[in-house]
Amino acid sequence: MLEKLEAEMRKICKEKLRLERFELPRAEALKFMEERDEPYKVELINDLPEDAVISFYRQGEFVDLCAGPHLDSTGRVKGNAIKLTSVTGAYWRGDSNRKMLQRIYGTCFPKKEEL
Image (cartoon, rainbow, N blue to C red; front, side):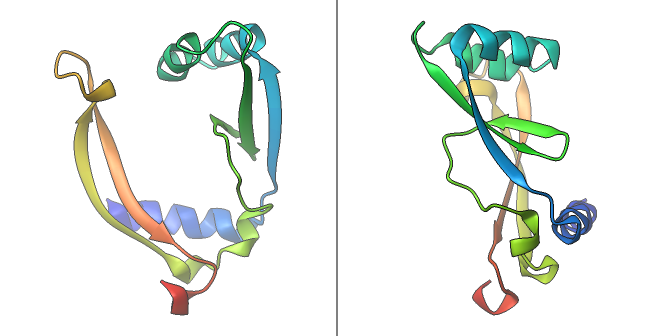
């Protein structure tokens, strides 16, 4: 499984996708994530103050909550400088009464020599 994910990550790096940061007010951020059927992200946003401005990063079609900073392009990472190390289960927000999700661990550097 990890090998397939690494292969997809290498493909994304070769695409040299631009990473774009943008912000939305809390109400717009909630609507944005609800429209994308992202219940976990909606829950996280709901925990923030009413006047919060939420930061996002877009990479191709993928958008995620994040304060950043990030690289400006996936092309900055050479495909052979990615290593996924393990997969574990983790309960959402550490609560065993909540859904168990998969957590994937890995590391990535600009060059394989730094890995």
